[in-house]
Image (cartoon, rainbow over all chains, first blue to last red; front, side, top):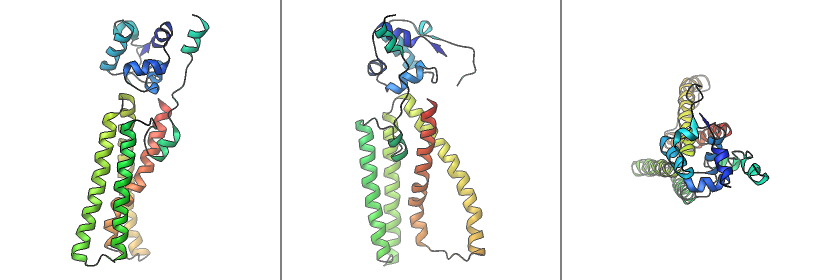
Length: 68
Length: 164
């Protein structure tokens, strides 16, 4: 799944660690999502959307690849 | 995008710590849950190992008491390890939990295959090499099983941590 997390984070001057704190996850989890090596759960996706004040669809888009 | 933002967007890497993964089978985040897991499992294992050494020094005498008591102690130690690990895993975030559970699943399969092959090797060794069978070995085998499988789990966890 593609996402624009890195851009949104940079727009708000947040480091991966800052965002991880807000989401109550590890920095490595934020990194894995940004680099599209891990697709977050629905619950975490909603949290991310809430942090950036966007809808899930605005942040995450399916890339048509098979599910991980 | 200004340079500061460009720095923020730079890939900071996953950097899962290698030493705690290979040493303790944890992520080295030094959370309360991780410290508690390590402390309690080590205390339990040390107490169990001390009991087994004492029992072996006494040659499990009297056997009617010492054998079931030692089995009970080892059972309690292993239950403690499993309980503390489940508590630790429940405290992790979703990716770390997924990696731990994947590592456990792969370790189970590895142990399954290893146990199957040991089942072939054991009768071969007893018939070909006349390896004497000792009853006390049954008491140690849960410890040995754990000691062998923990590095396997850590190795799987390390492998998975490089993927994410």
